[in-house]
Image (cartoon, rainbow, N blue to C red; front, side, top):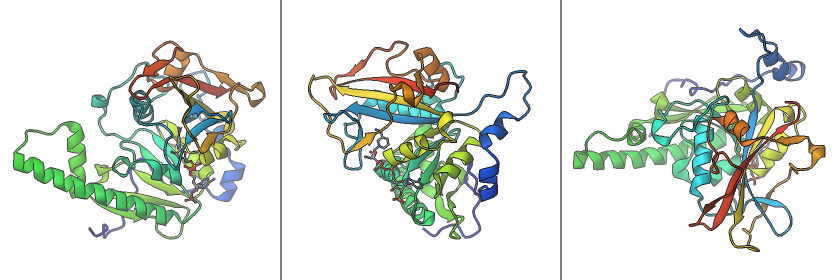
Length: 332
Ligand SMILES: NC(=O)c1ccc[n+]([C@@H]2O[C@H](COP(=O)([O-])OP(=O)(O)OC[C@H]3O[C@@H](n4cnc5c(N)ncnc54)[C@H](OP(=O)(O)O)[C@@H]3O)[C@@H](O)[C@H]2O)c1
């Protein structure tokens, strides 16, 4: 399918404008945001970047997060659902979990990820639906964007097959999620900002066939750009990207961590891992304080798998126990 011929508009919820180096050094968006006038007497609340990570203890004493470019464990439904509900529908100050059927396909939040994590998502699920997907790379952003277009073209071919099948069966009105998939059947995709720049976007026509996708060569700019837009900002990995954000002095105070702890039910058994989480959250010198479960729900509007307690919940099928913990920098 040919790419759209006219210059395509930027995907919803994305921007191609990047601050100049002077802006980047002279103007801290943290300070700019805090000084904006508000209707209430209390100062405007700063937005956070939530690092969403699932960890498992390993024999080497470290917390594992990946193996061979994938997750070390088979699909754990409760964790996947939590990840989806938080990153897609999460809103700080929220009070209750939303369910799959309540999602209207609107893009509210951004997910920032490394190029390898994008590639670790099964092709039929990427880019992640109803979220602005921000992929960071040190190579040419346009090359990564073209590979995203390739994924979308494959999904469009599958959607055309599904549409033909439904028409043949004369199926009644499709469910909202199938209707969203069917939008892909007639969609076309292209790359905008393809001029050697640091930021490139993937465009779809019709515009709402897929979430916005932006490819950035600067993690700092990607994070600041997301913070300046409506909606929540989630960093979904992997290790290199978590480390870069945790090591960024300006962004570190804005970080919150949503950590799903996963451990095998059978004592003494562990998942093999080759990629690890490096921040010691319990070490007081690193400045993290743990959220109470109530606070955790307030951060996202989504109940963690363990509900309102800090108890572990069990997935008998996979043979694991899990629970979510929340962390923020003291004083934020
Ligand atoms: N358990 C979890 O919660 C979780 C979450 C996410 C991922 N994972 C796992 O973690 C593994 C992937 O992690 P990873 O550390 O290998 O890769 P990653 O962080 O996902 O991606 C690394 C890539 O991101 C780009 N990059 C890194 N730092 C950058 C920077 N400062 N600026 C611009 N681009 C930058 C580079 O892309 P280029 O090479 O294109 O230049 C680099 O190769 C997989 O096994 C995955 O399944 C686990």
